[in-house]
Length: 192
Ligand code: FE
Image 1 (cartoon, rainbow, N blue to C red):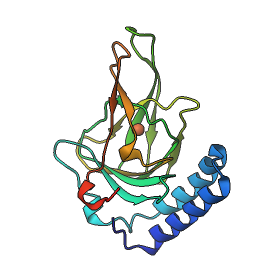
Image 2: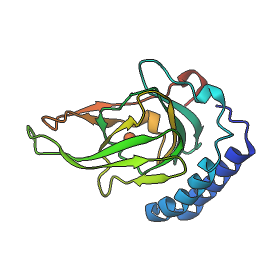
Image 3: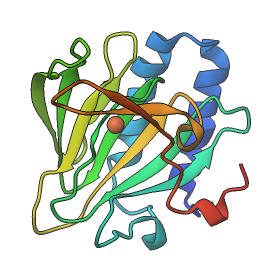
């Protein structure tokens, strides 16, 4: 991965220091990390075009930085018009900062086996805003591009090497879960 931007370099340096100093305290990482991510996405002039490319069929997840010790990863999430994820979880904390366009996230509670999933509400993210997710309070959601006619991009920070983590997608009607590993759209660039 190559993001030739002093702004991004600063972000990675500061986030690495935060993770070093927080010794696994998720509350601290999320509250301070939210500010760092807000600064990063406060300007939309640093993301290289090749990590901003949509695909006509699938939303894209480009790895921008992987912590060498797998403590966190940074991903650009690129939505083509009208694209959406299945309902999924993460199993690690996440920070989501909206860079361009907009996205809509619907949170879910997993039902009993065979029972439908319960919607917990929908939230819109607009450029400049940051949201957080934690498996400690529920991290199951479905996310979509808010727009049917344009590309949207958010920058995500996850509490692990997210493209390598085995997590789950869910069937909304039955709450059945299936394991999945997301990988990265720029897999060929990653040596992890
Ligand atoms: Fe997600």
